[in-house]
Image 1 (cartoon, chains in turn green, brown):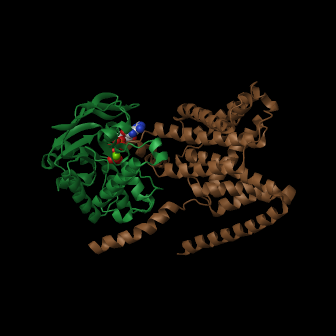
Image 2 (cartoon, protein in one colour):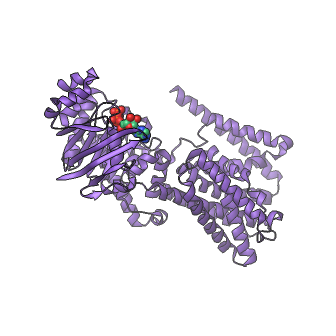
Image 3 (cartoon, protein in one colour):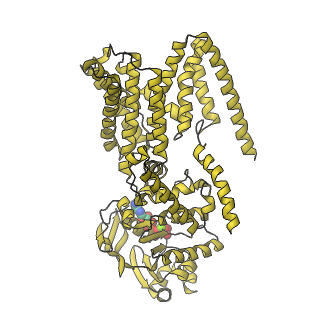
Length: 260
Length: 322
Ligand SMILES: Nc1ncnc2c1ncn2[C@@H]1O[C@H](COP(=O)(O)OP(=O)(O)OP(=O)(O)O)[C@@H](O)[C@H]1O
Ligand SMILES: [Mg+2]
């Protein structure tokens, strides 16, 4: 069953077609990776799914419900959350508050509750805190609760972003280069964490340059080049796909990694 | 370690100078009749109420507003008209002042929401000018001549009660889902909407509540001075309120309280310096900002400090379990 469907999605920035008639399906419960050279349009695909950009053409739907034209905050509510390629934490707030804010779309309390502090609101607060701590534990950050987000190490910040995206129990989690800036040990831990997240029933769509990680955890890989989807399949299929090798040929780094 | 020491040194110096200032202040209190001091206390309270409102807009939600005096003037005039022209009770007038200011906060909130940073600041500044000119030309406000004959109903206990209530409300708000959403908007708007925060809604809420506070403060102000004119609510006033929250530390409620006390009392305490008063006042501001660039209470999170102290034993327990 497909959870997310991109149907002929195109976006142009002036003369540049960043994403060009992309058709892509993400199946419920899978780990799908989107790879491609720098500037291929991968992050743009995430921005399109989360309505930060509006496609010039095409439709995107989540379990049959259209996403195009729906404001970003509603998309989180519908069950799609994400991390960012350049870390976007609430850096002057505590780690715990960062994750609590991640649960915003699952809360109900409004101004009235804030000012009256009735038992119902306190219960919700306690629930949010419990959920937040659980998410932090999941990403092995519970000892950092009271730390300010900006004081975490790079790898921890990446994990905190995941915790913040996870706490609202999304259906689909979009990870934009989660391993960037991590050391090899951290990457191994991250791989394990991503698998565990998937095992809780959350579908994972991942953009990543680290081929070892991509090949290691993805069930399917889609390859984007100059905005066009040039290949799609299992890691094995993609690795031996001529078009993919061609696309990466300019950069020897990628060629060797893919062939390995 | 050195950094910490440095920080502590500054803290101690600051404390000592504050102590000196207080000693000097009490000297003055002895010298001057108590109604004078009480009036200063009254203005501290009024400024605090308004500054807490601006702190929510600018310090917590991160929307730089240079038009806070406009909401204050709306509250001042609305309450004055309510009590003088319509003979309504004083506190009803205060509430009306707050509500009408709140209404305008929402109105101004909408078009300015697409603006950020400097652009928003200029837009709010423009709004404040429009309001001021409007009051100068309106008949019911008696134009530039000023609104006379407002009863001096504001008392110290009333102001302090409202101030304490405002502080409580702000602390509660900051620790609620709404408050956290506002903080998130200050930190990163894109990330906020990606976690499901309707940034428009919470910005408007911040403007509405902030304007309400300013309106209440303006109403109390009008019923203290008994005479108001549009020039009372110029750009300078907005800057005065902004200075309070910047000096105290943007987003910090204790900081706002300290800022309101220091900046309202300082010009009075420095009065014996006569002509040099404003120079010393300015220097004081500059020196504080040099030593505490994020404000007096900037970066000091009382709640977090308390929580950290409370969390520590918990952590130990968790360690033992494993
Ligand atoms: N808002 C925008 N305005 C104009 N051009 C844009 C915008 N966003 C992205 N682009 C362009 O679209 C192209 C794709 O960018 P995108 O960030 O999606 O690449 P990417 O595949 O994520 O690359 P990387 O691996 O470096 O992250 C780039 O050429 C980029 O300059
Ligand atoms: Mg990218």
